[in-house]
Image (cartoon, rainbow, N blue to C red; front, side):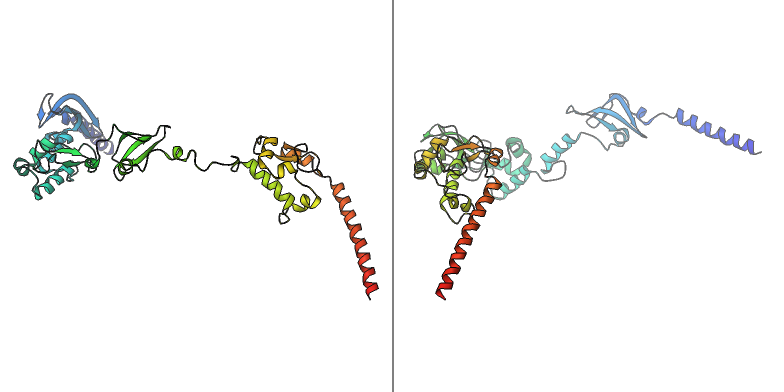
Length: 346
């Protein structure tokens, strides 16, 4: 009995599967060339899961795969661009339901009574004649302020455009005008100097003669430098040498000026002569090195050296120790002499 029941169940399932195979798909209900609103059906059919899609062409020329169920139930009649255009012309809204700039502008101008009779009564006519705003920031302006906005008396323009004067072909000093600046703040022009530099100059500064050239051209010939090396590192090196030899407040003075290291008279009074004799610094890693460690800073005893070469040219530790021993002996003599004087005084 159990085997017979199982066989009956299997037979029923087979019959159901055959009935499903004989059942025609949903897109067989839609014929090629059939129209649904603005859609025209083609022969390209696709299936995504359990849903059936068919390719349709709108009257505007746009092609898209539409769900067959939406076509049959008339949920989809036209493409999104056609429906958005229709809504914009009627209600001034885009495809997201937001009010467009043109519709908002039409309402404001209508309240201020700046529109002619045809535009005041119909937004469709206003939008057809004016069109969409060309660029963001542009405003609808009148050519003549004595008449209302109409087909012959309107233009799209930047709000600051009316403040620009017709001076594009003129030259102001060394400035040549290239174009108007409608993005920045204020009424200004993009200018090019004779040296090639470009800058934005206010229109009032050009007309009043305040600005005639770029900053670099204006600074030429002013505040001439005596030697031209004050900003260079070689000039700082010279003053560092001078401080080590003659300024007791510096930390390195005991090893230079304290030992009797001096600068020759030629260099001491003229930094330019020091620069002329030593020349330009080969690199940032080079510094002044004395050939004779115990000699002065002079053209015959100085050269440019790297840090490794300077380490090799330093005084030896034995020489320093011998100097320390001599100083200790002299100190002992002074102590003995100081002790004798105290005894005599007593």
